[in-house]
Amino acid sequence: MMCGGTRKLTPPPARRAACILDEAKVLTSGDRQAAYGHPLDHHGKTARLWSAYLGVAVEPAQVSALFILDKLVREQHLPKRDNRVDIAGYANVMDMIRGGGHDQD
Image 1 (cartoon, helix red, strand yellow):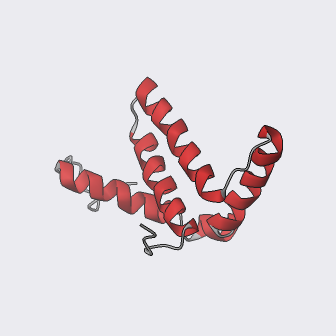
Image 2 (image 1 turned 60 degrees about the vertical axis):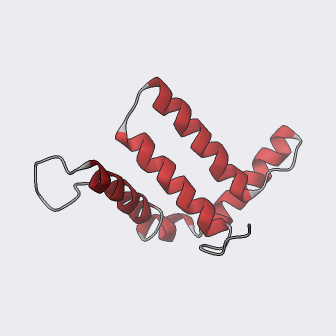
């Protein structure tokens, strides 16, 4: 996804970060959410499968955290923008699962 329209110049670092966040937000809503349902439902199903397979309780938000860890491993091996977009996306999904914007600290 191109940030800032059709410009071919590389945006400054702050804008690149904003672009990654914008792209992650688009990827975790809209068509994808319509196809897979709310992340709580999808990650809830994944958590139940992982819990049965591992023999330990896994919560839906932990699914997001584990996907983030996997993306960090990929980023360490081969840095790619896609990894960083996915990390931001999984963080957004975790926030959606936990109630979005309602800090529990």
